[in-house]
Image (cartoon, rainbow, N blue to C red; front, side):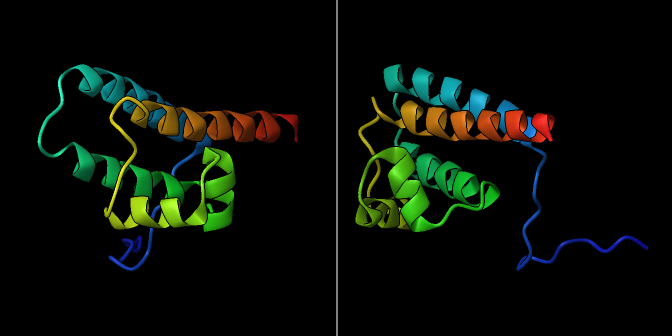
Length: 109
Protein backbone atom coordinates (compact mmCIF):
# COMPACT_ATOMS: atom_id res chain seq x y z
CA UNK A 1 0.00 0.00 0.00
CA UNK A 2 1.37 3.40 -0.99
CA UNK A 3 1.93 5.71 1.96
CA UNK A 4 0.29 9.14 1.71
CA UNK A 5 2.34 12.11 2.91
CA UNK A 6 1.37 13.35 6.34
CA UNK A 7 0.66 17.00 7.00
CA UNK A 8 4.26 17.22 8.25
CA UNK A 9 5.69 15.92 4.95
CA UNK A 10 5.77 17.90 1.74
CA UNK A 11 5.32 16.55 -1.75
CA UNK A 12 8.00 17.58 -4.24
CA UNK A 13 6.77 18.24 -7.73
CA UNK A 14 8.83 17.71 -10.86
CA UNK A 15 10.66 20.71 -12.27
CA UNK A 16 8.41 20.70 -15.33
CA UNK A 17 5.27 20.73 -13.20
CA UNK A 18 6.72 23.58 -11.14
CA UNK A 19 7.54 25.55 -14.29
CA UNK A 20 3.92 25.24 -15.39
CA UNK A 21 2.61 26.28 -11.97
CA UNK A 22 4.96 29.27 -11.70
CA UNK A 23 4.06 30.36 -15.22
CA UNK A 24 0.36 30.33 -14.32
CA UNK A 25 1.12 32.15 -11.07
CA UNK A 26 2.93 34.92 -12.94
CA UNK A 27 -0.12 35.29 -15.20
CA UNK A 28 -2.45 35.35 -12.19
CA UNK A 29 -0.53 38.11 -10.44
CA UNK A 30 -0.24 40.10 -13.67
CA UNK A 31 -4.04 39.98 -13.92
CA UNK A 32 -4.55 40.77 -10.24
CA UNK A 33 -2.43 43.88 -10.66
CA UNK A 34 -5.32 45.34 -12.67
CA UNK A 35 -8.13 43.83 -10.58
CA UNK A 36 -6.97 43.67 -6.95
CA UNK A 37 -8.98 41.87 -4.31
CA UNK A 38 -9.00 41.92 -0.53
CA UNK A 39 -7.21 38.57 -0.19
CA UNK A 40 -4.31 39.25 -2.57
CA UNK A 41 -1.73 39.37 0.24
CA UNK A 42 -2.89 36.00 1.56
CA UNK A 43 -2.71 34.58 -1.96
CA UNK A 44 0.81 35.96 -2.37
CA UNK A 45 1.96 34.52 0.97
CA UNK A 46 0.58 31.06 0.20
CA UNK A 47 2.06 31.00 -3.30
CA UNK A 48 5.40 32.40 -2.09
CA UNK A 49 5.70 29.79 0.66
CA UNK A 50 4.83 27.06 -1.85
CA UNK A 51 7.63 28.28 -4.13
CA UNK A 52 10.17 28.45 -1.32
CA UNK A 53 9.25 24.94 -0.20
CA UNK A 54 9.20 23.38 -3.67
CA UNK A 55 12.51 24.91 -4.69
CA UNK A 56 13.96 24.03 -1.28
CA UNK A 57 15.34 27.53 -0.85
CA UNK A 58 17.03 28.76 2.27
CA UNK A 59 16.28 32.31 3.41
CA UNK A 60 19.67 33.53 2.14
CA UNK A 61 19.15 31.93 -1.28
CA UNK A 62 15.67 33.42 -1.63
CA UNK A 63 16.93 36.86 -0.59
CA UNK A 64 19.73 36.70 -3.14
CA UNK A 65 17.34 35.51 -5.86
CA UNK A 66 14.84 38.31 -5.13
CA UNK A 67 17.60 40.88 -4.55
CA UNK A 68 16.20 41.80 -1.17
CA UNK A 69 17.03 41.24 2.49
CA UNK A 70 16.50 38.13 4.57
CA UNK A 71 14.20 40.20 6.77
CA UNK A 72 11.97 40.95 3.80
CA UNK A 73 11.85 37.25 2.90
CA UNK A 74 10.94 36.48 6.51
CA UNK A 75 8.10 39.03 6.42
CA UNK A 76 6.83 37.65 3.10
CA UNK A 77 6.82 34.06 4.39
CA UNK A 78 5.03 35.04 7.59
CA UNK A 79 2.47 37.16 5.74
CA UNK A 80 3.43 40.32 7.63
CA UNK A 81 4.09 42.08 4.33
CA UNK A 82 4.17 41.50 0.59
CA UNK A 83 5.61 43.35 -2.36
CA UNK A 84 3.44 46.01 -3.93
CA UNK A 85 0.95 44.31 -6.22
CA UNK A 86 2.83 45.66 -9.25
CA UNK A 87 5.93 43.66 -8.25
CA UNK A 88 4.35 40.39 -7.17
CA UNK A 89 4.43 38.72 -10.59
CA UNK A 90 8.18 39.37 -10.83
CA UNK A 91 8.74 37.31 -7.67
CA UNK A 92 7.23 34.29 -9.40
CA UNK A 93 9.13 35.09 -12.57
CA UNK A 94 12.29 34.58 -10.50
CA UNK A 95 10.97 31.22 -9.27
CA UNK A 96 10.22 30.30 -12.89
CA UNK A 97 13.75 31.29 -13.98
CA UNK A 98 15.24 29.12 -11.25
CA UNK A 99 12.99 26.21 -12.19
CA UNK A 100 13.95 26.51 -15.86
CA UNK A 101 17.62 26.64 -14.86
CA UNK A 102 17.13 23.38 -12.97
CA UNK A 103 15.34 21.78 -15.94
CA UNK A 104 18.28 22.69 -18.18
CA UNK A 105 20.70 21.32 -15.61
CA UNK A 106 18.72 18.04 -15.34
CA UNK A 107 18.64 17.73 -19.14
CA UNK A 108 22.41 18.21 -19.35
CA UNK A 109 23.08 15.38 -16.90
